Amino acid sequence: MHVDEIRKVAKARPFKTFEIRVENGEKYFITHPENIFITNQIVVTRDEQGESILITPESISTIRLVEEAQKVNAES
Image (cartoon, rainbow, N blue to C red):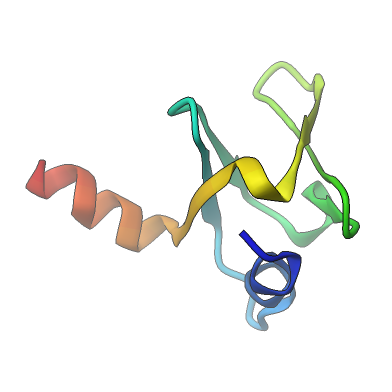
């Protein structure tokens, strides 16, 4: 995924919680704009235990607002 797409969601105002899903199926919820750091080579966030998670933009398969992700999960 291109970093500009990630930045667009992360910088949207008002901010809305979103989910990052990576190729291996793991997902990370971004609940606040200060919980994500984006460069051209890496996306940094934290997991539920507070551990830093480093993600390459290429490994991100989808980004969804939480309300959209919940609809998709409910339909599955």
